[in-house]
Length: 91
Image (tube, rainbow, N blue to C red; front, side):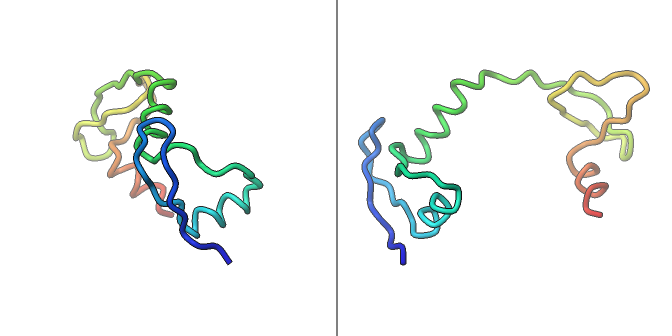
């Protein structure tokens, strides 16, 4: 039903492909407009509005390694590095 389309980014002028899968995703979400920017320009625009995130370094409660997290660790609350956190949430 859908076919890949080549679009031109309104930001940088580069051509990019709006894949059939992306078109199907847009349709499922009810989006009626095609993307106007390539992935790189969309990401840059998103990051520009978000601003820099302050990261905090602490010690992982499970392995004792370094854990870098986007929140200020509080005393008495366990903080895990990304590897240990992933192990804990796998189920």
